[in-house]
Image (cartoon, rainbow, N blue to C red; front, side, top):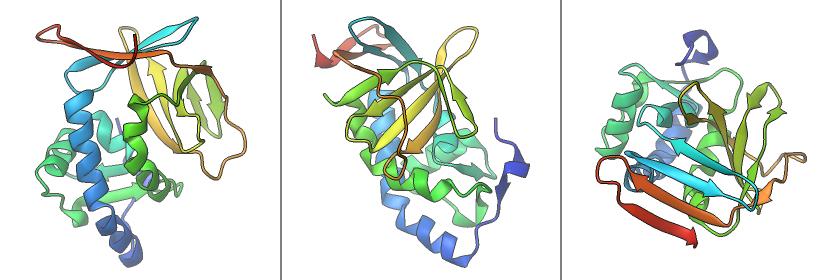
Length: 188
């Protein structure tokens, strides 16, 4: 859930930058729809496993945006290439553009360079787990709820010196929630 006090209207230059991110936003939404939405994504290391439940409404927050039409509409509008830029707000803390910059690397979360960290604190963010890319590009922080683990935040690690390294992920697979079909993305 977003808190409007944490967001503000973008100025002219910020709107121009957001326009430049429209294709990466559309591509990331399509990627998430194909590989994450409607599935339980499992990431396993030698010692632990985390199952992630990703909803369409999680995408807006990961982008650091607030959409007047709501989180689910933001995801749908990205897929349908109908985002109304004047209906977007950006985070007051200045992280929106950083999140949008790493969005193009989100497909790396299905590759061989993924690491799973335990809980931690990063600036003002507390998380239970994080999936990070070994190349220090991005991290997806995760939060446990009473019933499942959900995505919390997308972080740009390129300019950050300290972030937990974590364990190498040895297996990535999904299980479709309706059909129970299993797809192996990495490992055995």
